[in-house]
Amino acid sequence: MSDGLSRRRLLGASGTAAVAGVVVGATGAYAASRGNDAAPGGAPTSTEAAALALDAAIPFRGEHQAGIVTPAQDRLHFVALDVVTKDRDQLRQLLEDWTRAAERMTAGAEAAPGGLVGGGPNRAPEDTGEAFGLAASGLTITIGYGPSLFDDRFGLASKRPAALQDLPAFTGDQLDPRRTGGDLCIQACANDPQVAVHAVRNLVRLGFGVVAVRWSQLGFGRTSSTSTAQATPRNLFGFKDGTNNLKAEDPEGLAKHVWVAPGDEAGGGVWMTGGSYLVARRIRMHIEVWDRTRLQEQEDAIGRDKKEGAPLGQAKEYDALDLTRKGPDGRPAIPTTAHVRLAHHSNLGGIRLLRRGYNFTDGSDGVGHLDAGLFFLAYMRDPGAQFVPMQRALAEGDGLGEYIEHNGSAVFACPPGLHDGEHWGQALFG
Image 1 (cartoon, rainbow, N blue to C red):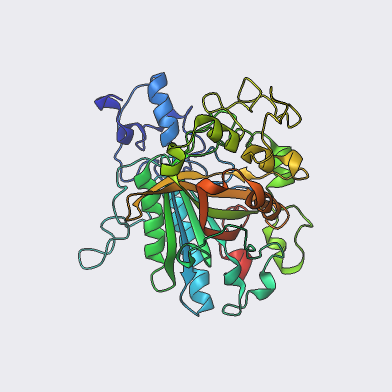
Image 2 (cartoon, rainbow, N blue to C red; image 1 turned 30 degrees about the vertical axis):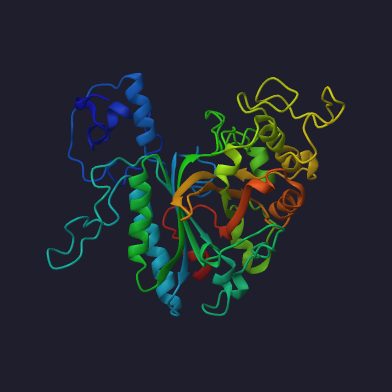
């Protein structure tokens, strides 16, 4: 992008007319770039328009929370938190404060109106500042409530949705308590890593004394597509990942598999109607072992060819899986232990999930091996009826099992979207 059409200037307060065609749903409440002055600029070229589309603001309010079916951004900062206060009113107020700050930041504004100078030199700034001058970058902030939030601390037991249950133990799990569970979660996705980190940092800062970080995960390089407009990405094993994922353009599929429907939850859990359940799993990949494995063994473990992503025995990525097809040796073209076979909806009574995972690399483990893998995120209508049977099928026979380990896990209830004037605490506290 030219110096005369920087990210900062193109999304300036008076530059919105030039980019109205590519800024998708930017709210009029805040400027689309933090701390910008008005800036001139001509109509963008197609290359600049593509960059602007990545910089655009995504509406915060709506029927469903953003960050679920939103076309998956490239960067993630995910955090699970424990509530450390015993004061119900403090928690309610924090959820209201988070709503206000999240709406501002997703629009490209600072976390609070005072920004970098609010309160004067003798008080901490009201925004940490690292995203000052950066565009909204497609930021979405999605919140979820863990099963433990509905214990007896805050009088929320009667509000607990029936489907919000701790996940059972699965064969092969090696869960680290330091990467498992949480009362609350925040998922921040953006096309600029600094914007995603800024969002989580400022929400955690607002929660000082009320919540504390339990664990967090940075992610890069999405490992699934949530829109038909996106190409299928590759995971760290080098294979295309999420070819048959549910897509935003499939409202019937989303209604059936992702959104909590009227009647799914009764009594105190009815507030989850229109929401979705999130399962998060930190899956470490044994990169060094995989990299020494023969190509045929890799493809047999996945059930697809590595170059095109086609099902074994087929030619193209989107060719339908034919689980009855035989290879030249008379055995199934897609092995009975192949990941795609075991996870396919035809093998699971029609079960499907909306996947939204990310690659991660967290340095090394101290003995020369990469601590890297897949941070699996999936949204669904009922974890017990969808994720649990799928994971049990995979845990018992997946050919990938020897190359991966699940060492972190959590489940959260992500409420529906907010209408004007509503905040995240209302459904729980009124």
